[in-house]
Image (cartoon, rainbow over all chains, first blue to last red; front, side, top):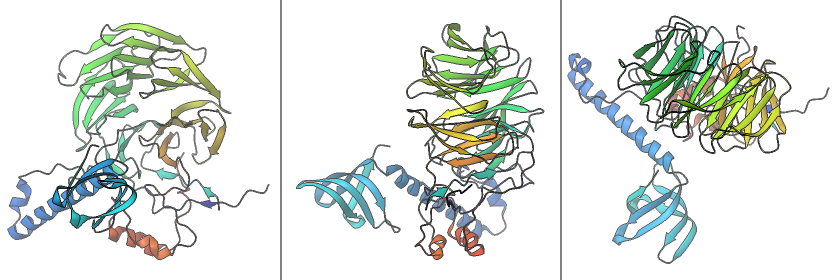
Length: 131
Length: 350
């Protein structure tokens, strides 16, 4: 029986399984609540390092939240406040790696609707959307 | 070149997987819980299948498991005559709810304030999770063990299935509104809030009914006895699995069988679409869960579609689609194998 030649979909890796020695729910995992006061860290002898790592953790969590907010924005109507009191609305598409440009479509400008556009981040003061 | 489905196998359970459920979409993605006869339900990241943790505490087979909408709580139903509520972030047990017999099914309301349970004692119980010490409200009427109980119509009604009947109850009055009789054992039930559709499987049939009136909408026949079926959120496809170890994918509108997939080494007990419809998960007698792509070849989760022209070096650059994989991890994975991993793990203990 001749079967058609097909390529199996490539995968990055296989799903990670249980570690075999703990029940999981890593305390420093993605959903771990950010506690303002962490007693364990204060007991650490090297106080300087612990403060830094606390700050780094907070930075990482905030960065992750920001990136997730960008993901949540995809395809939605976003309202941008630009310089000189200009407000425009558009459908959010994507940002580039450094979040220097916003790729949008159906940009409503005072002189008409632009099908596709690139908004420079340096031109944007703020933006808002409803998830 | 046509792409062939690569299912992702989630190992870890040592006995058959009998139930699985997805959470809603949360700011951290979505999650998956699996109920297993080994008594150790597991929480996994929904889009990758990565294990997050195991809920330890039950002393018998876990027959039912569910997550609340934001995946902050989990509930499990077990053969040790208890249902338990867990903190799904820390893995800690929050409540143990004693029953008089094996508990088979658990379901949270949308606001996570109430838990519905059902089992071999033939009673539906509603627990107020804000008052765990209070006695639950009980609804009797079933004449055989309850297999599945679900909240529906914005938690104003309850749907429950026993061996040969599916019943609709009004929550406020705790009385039966309507019932359906079957001459074959009902194997599974799924409720789709958008559109108020009820998916029921029995024998080789996959039936769709209105969740409001219980009136039949349509039904399809599969080539083998089906144990579970799930309708895609956009109602374009449905997937079903059962005793012949295969997963079937049908077009919901035409009923045409689109695909069938082999992979499991035992009967499939449960199938569910993810909340975004991009994948579906199946749990089997072989002790594994498998994740399958709805659109084969699409880049999503751990599946990465590589076009023939692309350099293998492309794989080393982290892309926005994989927030959970760090740059180092990606480079580590891809430098070991410059070729992609093609097939899923073959060794599975049946």
